[in-house]
Image (cartoon, rainbow, N blue to C red; front, side, top):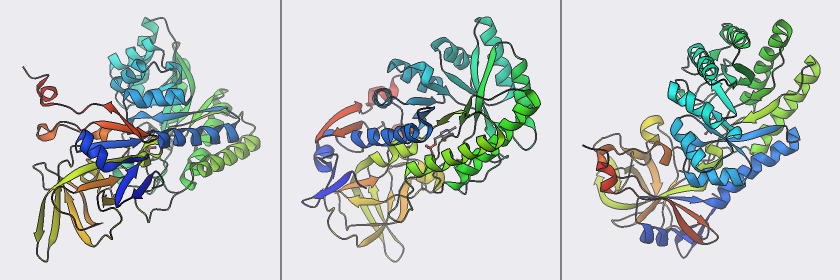
Length: 428
Ligand SMILES: Cc1ncc(COP(=O)(O)O)c(C=O)c1O
Protein backbone atom coordinates (compact mmCIF):
# COMPACT_ATOMS: atom_id res chain seq x y z
CA UNK A 1 0.00 0.00 0.00
CA UNK A 2 1.31 3.42 -0.89
CA UNK A 3 1.11 4.79 2.66
CA UNK A 4 3.41 2.07 3.96
CA UNK A 5 7.21 2.09 3.75
CA UNK A 6 10.00 -0.22 4.85
CA UNK A 7 13.13 0.97 6.68
CA UNK A 8 15.73 -1.14 8.54
CA UNK A 9 13.59 -4.26 8.13
CA UNK A 10 10.69 -2.40 9.84
CA UNK A 11 7.26 -1.38 8.60
CA UNK A 12 6.41 2.35 8.72
CA UNK A 13 3.02 4.01 8.33
CA UNK A 14 2.58 7.76 7.88
CA UNK A 15 6.31 8.13 8.59
CA UNK A 16 6.05 6.38 11.99
CA UNK A 17 7.69 3.07 12.89
CA UNK A 18 5.07 0.44 13.65
CA UNK A 19 7.41 -0.98 16.30
CA UNK A 20 7.47 2.37 18.09
CA UNK A 21 3.69 2.46 17.88
CA UNK A 22 3.35 -1.06 19.28
CA UNK A 23 5.82 -0.23 22.06
CA UNK A 24 4.18 3.11 22.94
CA UNK A 25 0.50 2.13 22.81
CA UNK A 26 0.60 -1.66 23.17
CA UNK A 27 -1.15 -4.22 20.97
CA UNK A 28 -3.64 -4.95 19.51
CA UNK A 29 -3.61 -1.49 18.00
CA UNK A 30 -5.53 0.10 15.13
CA UNK A 31 -3.36 2.61 13.25
CA UNK A 32 -4.80 4.94 10.62
CA UNK A 33 -2.98 7.25 8.24
CA UNK A 34 -4.80 10.58 8.55
CA UNK A 35 -3.35 12.00 5.32
CA UNK A 36 -4.63 9.03 3.32
CA UNK A 37 -8.15 9.40 4.77
CA UNK A 38 -8.10 13.07 3.77
CA UNK A 39 -6.61 12.26 0.35
CA UNK A 40 -9.40 9.75 -0.35
CA UNK A 41 -12.11 12.20 0.70
CA UNK A 42 -10.54 14.88 -1.50
CA UNK A 43 -10.27 12.51 -4.45
CA UNK A 44 -14.02 11.80 -4.39
CA UNK A 45 -14.84 15.47 -3.84
CA UNK A 46 -12.57 16.56 -6.68
CA UNK A 47 -14.20 14.06 -9.06
CA UNK A 48 -17.61 15.38 -8.06
CA UNK A 49 -16.50 18.95 -8.66
CA UNK A 50 -15.12 17.90 -12.05
CA UNK A 51 -17.96 15.80 -13.35
CA UNK A 52 -21.00 17.35 -11.66
CA UNK A 53 -19.73 20.93 -11.33
CA UNK A 54 -20.43 20.76 -7.62
CA UNK A 55 -24.05 19.66 -8.19
CA UNK A 56 -23.70 16.79 -5.77
CA UNK A 57 -22.50 15.63 -2.39
CA UNK A 58 -20.08 12.91 -1.31
CA UNK A 59 -21.34 11.49 1.99
CA UNK A 60 -18.78 9.43 3.92
CA UNK A 61 -20.51 6.21 5.07
CA UNK A 62 -19.50 6.44 8.70
CA UNK A 63 -20.49 2.82 9.40
CA UNK A 64 -17.08 1.93 7.94
CA UNK A 65 -15.32 3.72 10.82
CA UNK A 66 -17.07 6.16 13.11
CA UNK A 67 -15.59 8.28 15.86
CA UNK A 68 -15.38 11.99 16.64
CA UNK A 69 -12.02 12.38 14.90
CA UNK A 70 -13.17 11.00 11.55
CA UNK A 71 -16.39 13.06 11.64
CA UNK A 72 -14.28 16.17 12.25
CA UNK A 73 -12.05 15.28 9.31
CA UNK A 74 -15.07 14.78 7.02
CA UNK A 75 -16.35 18.16 8.18
CA UNK A 76 -12.99 19.84 7.52
CA UNK A 77 -12.85 18.26 4.06
CA UNK A 78 -16.28 19.68 3.27
CA UNK A 79 -18.07 16.40 2.57
CA UNK A 80 -21.34 15.00 3.97
CA UNK A 81 -21.99 12.02 6.20
CA UNK A 82 -24.12 8.89 5.98
CA UNK A 83 -25.26 7.51 9.36
CA UNK A 84 -27.36 4.43 10.13
CA UNK A 85 -28.17 4.79 13.80
CA UNK A 86 -28.79 7.37 16.47
CA UNK A 87 -25.35 6.46 17.85
CA UNK A 88 -23.59 7.42 14.62
CA UNK A 89 -25.77 10.52 14.37
CA UNK A 90 -24.97 11.47 17.97
CA UNK A 91 -21.25 11.15 17.22
CA UNK A 92 -21.63 13.45 14.21
CA UNK A 93 -23.64 15.99 16.23
CA UNK A 94 -20.98 15.95 18.97
CA UNK A 95 -18.36 16.56 16.27
CA UNK A 96 -20.36 19.67 15.35
CA UNK A 97 -21.14 18.30 11.89
CA UNK A 98 -23.46 20.34 9.67
CA UNK A 99 -26.58 18.17 10.03
CA UNK A 100 -28.04 19.40 6.75
CA UNK A 101 -25.24 17.37 5.09
CA UNK A 102 -26.20 14.20 6.96
CA UNK A 103 -28.15 11.36 5.43
CA UNK A 104 -29.86 8.91 7.78
CA UNK A 105 -30.15 5.28 6.63
CA UNK A 106 -31.47 2.13 8.29
CA UNK A 107 -34.05 -0.56 7.59
CA UNK A 108 -35.65 -0.35 11.02
CA UNK A 109 -35.21 3.09 12.51
CA UNK A 110 -36.93 3.40 15.86
CA UNK A 111 -39.42 6.13 16.70
CA UNK A 112 -36.86 7.82 18.92
CA UNK A 113 -34.26 7.68 16.12
CA UNK A 114 -36.68 9.33 13.69
CA UNK A 115 -37.56 11.98 16.27
CA UNK A 116 -33.89 12.65 16.98
CA UNK A 117 -33.13 12.95 13.26
CA UNK A 118 -35.85 15.57 12.84
CA UNK A 119 -34.86 17.44 15.99
CA UNK A 120 -31.23 17.84 14.92
CA UNK A 121 -32.19 18.79 11.35
CA UNK A 122 -30.82 15.84 9.37
CA UNK A 123 -30.78 16.84 5.69
CA UNK A 124 -32.19 13.62 4.26
CA UNK A 125 -33.81 10.57 5.80
CA UNK A 126 -33.56 7.50 3.58
CA UNK A 127 -36.93 5.84 4.10
CA UNK A 128 -36.76 2.06 3.81
CA UNK A 129 -40.38 0.89 4.08
CA UNK A 130 -43.99 2.08 4.26
CA UNK A 131 -44.40 1.73 8.00
CA UNK A 132 -41.41 4.02 8.44
CA UNK A 133 -42.92 6.52 6.01
CA UNK A 134 -46.13 6.57 7.99
CA UNK A 135 -44.35 6.93 11.33
CA UNK A 136 -42.15 9.71 10.01
CA UNK A 137 -45.11 11.65 8.63
CA UNK A 138 -46.88 11.39 11.99
CA UNK A 139 -43.79 12.51 13.93
CA UNK A 140 -43.19 15.42 11.54
CA UNK A 141 -46.84 16.43 11.81
CA UNK A 142 -46.62 16.40 15.59
CA UNK A 143 -43.59 18.62 15.47
CA UNK A 144 -45.10 20.82 12.78
CA UNK A 145 -42.19 20.03 10.49
CA UNK A 146 -41.54 18.71 7.00
CA UNK A 147 -39.34 15.60 6.77
CA UNK A 148 -37.03 15.59 3.74
CA UNK A 149 -36.74 12.05 2.49
CA UNK A 150 -35.26 9.88 -0.19
CA UNK A 151 -36.48 6.35 -0.85
CA UNK A 152 -34.13 3.39 -0.69
CA UNK A 153 -34.78 1.37 -3.84
CA UNK A 154 -33.70 -2.19 -4.69
CA UNK A 155 -32.87 -1.82 -8.36
CA UNK A 156 -32.63 -5.59 -8.92
CA UNK A 157 -28.92 -5.63 -9.72
CA UNK A 158 -26.51 -8.38 -8.79
CA UNK A 159 -23.16 -6.73 -8.14
CA UNK A 160 -21.20 -10.04 -8.06
CA UNK A 161 -19.96 -9.66 -4.55
CA UNK A 162 -20.30 -11.68 -1.30
CA UNK A 163 -23.92 -12.64 -0.47
CA UNK A 164 -23.82 -10.79 2.87
CA UNK A 165 -22.68 -7.49 1.32
CA UNK A 166 -25.01 -7.62 -1.69
CA UNK A 167 -28.01 -5.36 -1.24
CA UNK A 168 -29.48 -4.37 -4.58
CA UNK A 169 -31.32 -7.59 -5.41
CA UNK A 170 -35.00 -8.23 -4.70
CA UNK A 171 -34.31 -10.73 -1.90
CA UNK A 172 -32.83 -8.16 0.46
CA UNK A 173 -34.06 -6.68 3.73
CA UNK A 174 -33.25 -3.17 2.49
CA UNK A 175 -35.61 -0.87 0.62
CA UNK A 176 -38.43 -1.03 -1.93
CA UNK A 177 -38.30 -3.38 -4.90
CA UNK A 178 -38.43 -1.71 -8.27
CA UNK A 179 -39.55 -4.56 -10.47
CA UNK A 180 -42.64 -5.41 -8.40
CA UNK A 181 -43.99 -1.85 -8.61
CA UNK A 182 -43.54 -1.47 -4.83
CA UNK A 183 -41.15 1.48 -5.26
CA UNK A 184 -43.54 3.38 -7.55
CA UNK A 185 -46.45 2.81 -5.14
CA UNK A 186 -44.32 4.16 -2.29
CA UNK A 187 -43.58 7.32 -4.28
CA UNK A 188 -47.31 7.80 -4.90
CA UNK A 189 -47.98 7.41 -1.19
CA UNK A 190 -45.22 9.86 -0.19
CA UNK A 191 -46.68 12.53 -2.46
CA UNK A 192 -49.96 12.27 -0.56
CA UNK A 193 -48.40 12.89 2.87
CA UNK A 194 -48.49 16.50 4.00
CA UNK A 195 -45.42 16.41 6.22
CA UNK A 196 -43.15 14.55 3.83
CA UNK A 197 -41.07 16.13 1.08
CA UNK A 198 -39.80 13.50 -1.35
CA UNK A 199 -36.40 14.72 -2.52
CA UNK A 200 -35.17 11.70 -4.35
CA UNK A 201 -34.21 8.09 -4.77
CA UNK A 202 -31.35 5.98 -3.49
CA UNK A 203 -29.78 2.65 -4.32
CA UNK A 204 -26.78 0.81 -2.91
CA UNK A 205 -25.99 -2.33 -4.84
CA UNK A 206 -23.32 -3.87 -2.62
CA UNK A 207 -19.78 -3.53 -1.38
CA UNK A 208 -16.23 -4.20 -2.60
CA UNK A 209 -17.34 -3.77 -6.24
CA UNK A 210 -14.41 -3.79 -8.65
CA UNK A 211 -16.08 -2.68 -11.84
CA UNK A 212 -17.80 0.54 -12.94
CA UNK A 213 -20.48 -1.32 -14.91
CA UNK A 214 -22.81 -2.26 -11.98
CA UNK A 215 -22.88 1.45 -11.00
CA UNK A 216 -23.71 2.73 -14.48
CA UNK A 217 -26.29 -0.04 -14.83
CA UNK A 218 -27.84 1.01 -11.50
CA UNK A 219 -27.99 4.63 -12.70
CA UNK A 220 -29.81 3.51 -15.88
CA UNK A 221 -32.31 1.47 -13.91
CA UNK A 222 -32.95 4.31 -11.45
CA UNK A 223 -33.63 6.71 -14.33
CA UNK A 224 -36.32 4.38 -15.63
CA UNK A 225 -38.15 4.99 -12.33
CA UNK A 226 -37.42 8.73 -12.36
CA UNK A 227 -38.91 8.94 -15.86
CA UNK A 228 -42.00 6.93 -14.87
CA UNK A 229 -42.55 9.23 -11.87
CA UNK A 230 -42.28 12.29 -14.09
CA UNK A 231 -44.61 10.96 -16.79
CA UNK A 232 -47.23 9.32 -14.60
CA UNK A 233 -47.15 11.52 -11.49
CA UNK A 234 -45.89 14.77 -13.00
CA UNK A 235 -43.23 14.92 -10.29
CA UNK A 236 -39.54 15.65 -10.87
CA UNK A 237 -37.05 13.96 -8.61
CA UNK A 238 -34.32 16.30 -7.25
CA UNK A 239 -31.80 13.81 -5.82
CA UNK A 240 -30.27 10.60 -7.08
CA UNK A 241 -28.06 8.75 -4.61
CA UNK A 242 -26.00 5.91 -6.07
CA UNK A 243 -24.73 4.56 -2.74
CA UNK A 244 -21.29 3.28 -1.85
CA UNK A 245 -19.46 0.04 -2.48
CA UNK A 246 -16.31 1.11 -4.36
CA UNK A 247 -13.77 -1.69 -4.01
CA UNK A 248 -10.34 -1.46 -2.42
CA UNK A 249 -7.12 -3.39 -2.79
CA UNK A 250 -7.02 -5.92 0.04
CA UNK A 251 -4.62 -8.21 -1.79
CA UNK A 252 -1.73 -7.51 -4.13
CA UNK A 253 -3.69 -9.42 -6.77
CA UNK A 254 -6.87 -7.32 -6.42
CA UNK A 255 -7.61 -5.20 -9.47
CA UNK A 256 -8.02 -1.65 -8.38
CA UNK A 257 -10.16 0.96 -10.13
CA UNK A 258 -9.51 4.64 -9.57
CA UNK A 259 -12.53 6.24 -7.86
CA UNK A 260 -12.48 8.92 -10.49
CA UNK A 261 -13.34 6.27 -13.12
CA UNK A 262 -16.58 5.34 -11.35
CA UNK A 263 -17.64 8.96 -11.05
CA UNK A 264 -16.67 9.75 -14.65
CA UNK A 265 -18.54 6.74 -16.07
CA UNK A 266 -21.65 7.46 -14.01
CA UNK A 267 -21.63 11.15 -14.92
CA UNK A 268 -21.44 10.24 -18.63
CA UNK A 269 -24.40 7.88 -18.45
CA UNK A 270 -26.40 10.40 -16.40
CA UNK A 271 -25.70 13.19 -18.92
CA UNK A 272 -26.70 10.87 -21.79
CA UNK A 273 -29.94 9.66 -20.19
CA UNK A 274 -31.11 13.07 -18.99
CA UNK A 275 -30.50 14.53 -22.46
CA UNK A 276 -32.27 11.65 -24.23
CA UNK A 277 -35.26 11.55 -21.89
CA UNK A 278 -35.58 15.30 -21.33
CA UNK A 279 -35.13 14.93 -17.58
CA UNK A 280 -33.46 17.48 -15.34
CA UNK A 281 -30.02 16.57 -14.04
CA UNK A 282 -30.52 15.48 -10.44
CA UNK A 283 -28.32 16.45 -7.52
CA UNK A 284 -26.05 13.39 -7.26
CA UNK A 285 -25.00 11.77 -4.00
CA UNK A 286 -22.70 8.85 -3.22
CA UNK A 287 -21.81 7.13 0.05
CA UNK A 288 -18.29 5.68 -0.02
CA UNK A 289 -17.15 4.11 3.24
CA UNK A 290 -14.56 1.37 2.75
CA UNK A 291 -12.79 3.23 -0.06
CA UNK A 292 -12.17 6.25 2.20
CA UNK A 293 -10.87 4.57 5.34
CA UNK A 294 -10.11 0.94 4.42
CA UNK A 295 -6.68 1.39 2.82
CA UNK A 296 -5.66 3.94 5.48
CA UNK A 297 -5.68 1.46 8.37
CA UNK A 298 -3.54 -1.38 9.65
CA UNK A 299 -3.83 -3.44 12.82
CA UNK A 300 -0.80 -4.41 14.89
CA UNK A 301 -0.71 -7.54 17.03
CA UNK A 302 1.89 -9.36 19.12
CA UNK A 303 2.57 -13.01 18.40
CA UNK A 304 1.95 -15.35 21.32
CA UNK A 305 1.95 -19.11 20.76
CA UNK A 306 3.10 -20.63 17.47
CA UNK A 307 1.64 -24.10 17.05
CA UNK A 308 2.91 -26.29 14.25
CA UNK A 309 0.76 -29.35 13.52
CA UNK A 310 3.07 -31.43 11.31
CA UNK A 311 1.74 -31.98 7.79
CA UNK A 312 -1.47 -30.15 8.70
CA UNK A 313 -1.08 -26.47 9.52
CA UNK A 314 0.88 -23.87 11.44
CA UNK A 315 -1.22 -21.64 13.71
CA UNK A 316 0.23 -18.29 14.72
CA UNK A 317 -1.80 -16.93 17.63
CA UNK A 318 -2.07 -13.21 18.26
CA UNK A 319 -3.36 -11.04 21.10
CA UNK A 320 -6.50 -9.96 19.18
CA UNK A 321 -8.76 -11.63 16.62
CA UNK A 322 -12.47 -11.69 15.82
CA UNK A 323 -13.25 -9.16 18.55
CA UNK A 324 -11.29 -6.45 16.73
CA UNK A 325 -11.72 -7.87 13.20
CA UNK A 326 -14.74 -10.14 12.68
CA UNK A 327 -14.58 -9.93 8.87
CA UNK A 328 -12.97 -13.32 8.25
CA UNK A 329 -15.51 -15.01 10.53
CA UNK A 330 -18.34 -13.14 8.77
CA UNK A 331 -17.34 -13.24 5.12
CA UNK A 332 -14.04 -15.13 4.85
CA UNK A 333 -12.44 -11.80 3.96
CA UNK A 334 -8.86 -11.91 2.80
CA UNK A 335 -5.96 -9.76 4.00
CA UNK A 336 -2.25 -9.31 3.36
CA UNK A 337 -0.19 -9.64 6.51
CA UNK A 338 3.47 -9.16 7.34
CA UNK A 339 5.85 -9.29 10.25
CA UNK A 340 6.44 -5.61 11.11
CA UNK A 341 9.89 -6.28 12.61
CA UNK A 342 11.03 -8.57 9.75
CA UNK A 343 9.33 -6.58 7.04
CA UNK A 344 12.06 -6.86 4.38
CA UNK A 345 12.59 -10.60 4.83
CA UNK A 346 10.97 -13.04 2.42
CA UNK A 347 7.66 -14.61 3.36
CA UNK A 348 8.60 -18.29 3.65
CA UNK A 349 5.76 -19.66 5.80
CA UNK A 350 2.12 -20.40 5.10
CA UNK A 351 0.12 -20.00 8.30
CA UNK A 352 -3.31 -19.57 9.84
CA UNK A 353 -3.51 -16.36 11.86
CA UNK A 354 -5.57 -17.22 14.93
CA UNK A 355 -7.23 -14.96 17.46
CA UNK A 356 -7.48 -15.50 21.21
CA UNK A 357 -11.24 -16.03 21.49
CA UNK A 358 -12.91 -19.24 22.49
CA UNK A 359 -14.15 -19.97 18.92
CA UNK A 360 -12.52 -22.18 16.28
CA UNK A 361 -13.70 -19.69 13.67
CA UNK A 362 -11.73 -16.91 15.36
CA UNK A 363 -9.22 -16.39 12.59
CA UNK A 364 -7.90 -13.41 10.66
CA UNK A 365 -7.16 -15.74 7.79
CA UNK A 366 -6.09 -19.20 6.60
CA UNK A 367 -3.17 -20.02 4.31
CA UNK A 368 -1.57 -16.60 4.64
CA UNK A 369 2.02 -16.12 3.61
CA UNK A 370 4.23 -14.63 6.29
CA UNK A 371 7.85 -14.34 7.35
CA UNK A 372 8.97 -17.02 9.83
CA UNK A 373 7.76 -15.57 13.14
CA UNK A 374 8.31 -16.30 16.82
CA UNK A 375 6.77 -15.19 20.10
CA UNK A 376 6.81 -11.38 20.61
CA UNK A 377 7.15 -10.56 16.91
CA UNK A 378 4.74 -7.86 15.72
CA UNK A 379 2.25 -8.73 12.98
CA UNK A 380 0.65 -6.07 10.80
CA UNK A 381 -2.65 -6.87 9.07
CA UNK A 382 -3.10 -4.43 6.19
CA UNK A 383 -6.13 -2.51 4.91
CA UNK A 384 -8.12 -2.86 8.13
CA UNK A 385 -9.36 0.74 8.27
CA UNK A 386 -12.96 -0.14 7.37
CA UNK A 387 -15.41 -2.37 9.21
CA UNK A 388 -12.85 -3.43 11.82
CA UNK A 389 -13.03 -0.97 14.73
CA UNK A 390 -16.66 -0.26 13.82
CA UNK A 391 -17.55 -3.97 13.96
CA UNK A 392 -15.48 -4.77 17.04
CA UNK A 393 -17.06 -6.42 20.08
CA UNK A 394 -16.32 -7.32 23.68
CA UNK A 395 -16.81 -11.06 23.19
CA UNK A 396 -14.99 -12.94 25.96
CA UNK A 397 -14.95 -9.56 27.74
CA UNK A 398 -11.97 -8.46 25.72
CA UNK A 399 -11.47 -4.67 25.81
CA UNK A 400 -11.45 -2.92 22.42
CA UNK A 401 -8.06 -1.69 21.17
CA UNK A 402 -7.33 2.01 20.79
CA UNK A 403 -7.25 3.84 17.46
CA UNK A 404 -4.16 5.92 16.76
CA UNK A 405 -3.86 8.39 13.88
CA UNK A 406 -0.46 8.96 12.31
CA UNK A 407 0.50 12.03 10.30
CA UNK A 408 3.81 13.65 9.38
CA UNK A 409 5.82 11.25 11.51
CA UNK A 410 3.68 11.84 14.62
CA UNK A 411 0.92 9.84 16.29
CA UNK A 412 -2.11 10.68 18.45
CA UNK A 413 -4.78 8.58 20.14
CA UNK A 414 -8.26 9.27 18.72
CA UNK A 415 -10.03 6.44 20.53
CA UNK A 416 -8.64 5.25 23.87
CA UNK A 417 -8.04 1.60 24.72
CA UNK A 418 -10.92 0.18 26.73
CA UNK A 419 -10.14 -0.83 30.29
CA UNK A 420 -11.58 -3.62 32.43
CA UNK A 421 -13.50 -0.87 34.24
CA UNK A 422 -15.13 -0.01 30.87
CA UNK A 423 -16.04 -3.67 30.51
CA UNK A 424 -17.99 -3.79 33.79
CA UNK A 425 -19.26 -0.17 33.63
CA UNK A 426 -22.89 -1.09 32.93
CA UNK A 427 -23.06 -4.21 35.10
CA UNK A 428 -25.25 -4.00 38.22
C1 LIG B 1 -26.67 2.16 2.13
C2 LIG B 1 -25.19 2.04 2.18
N1 LIG B 1 -24.46 3.06 1.72
C3 LIG B 1 -23.11 3.00 1.75
C4 LIG B 1 -22.44 1.91 2.24
C5 LIG B 1 -20.95 1.92 2.26
O1 LIG B 1 -20.41 0.92 1.48
P1 LIG B 1 -18.85 0.84 1.26
O2 LIG B 1 -18.21 0.93 2.59
O3 LIG B 1 -18.64 -0.48 0.62
O4 LIG B 1 -18.47 1.98 0.37
C6 LIG B 1 -23.17 0.81 2.72
C7 LIG B 1 -22.49 -0.39 3.23
O5 LIG B 1 -23.01 -1.28 3.78
C8 LIG B 1 -24.60 0.88 2.68
O6 LIG B 1 -25.35 -0.13 3.13
